[in-house]
Length: 105
Image (tube, rainbow, N blue to C red):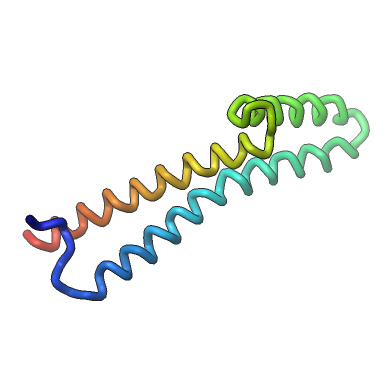
């Protein structure tokens, strides 16, 4: 039974490193995106006339995150980050499989 790994011993460590980095970047990207959006809205709230929009927008983002975190915005962002990390890992696994099957042909 062939699992797609070649007989070269450097391939699995390269794959594991790629899988780890892809999962990490896929996990951190939504966290940084949401954090940057909330930080930008807080700074926007310092501008007179935009404070109402800033409070409404940040409240909407936090209530969206609370939906996924059982009432806690931090848990919601971690759940979304974990889901994105898992999708990134699955995508990296698929790409690795396709690359190894193309190399065999």
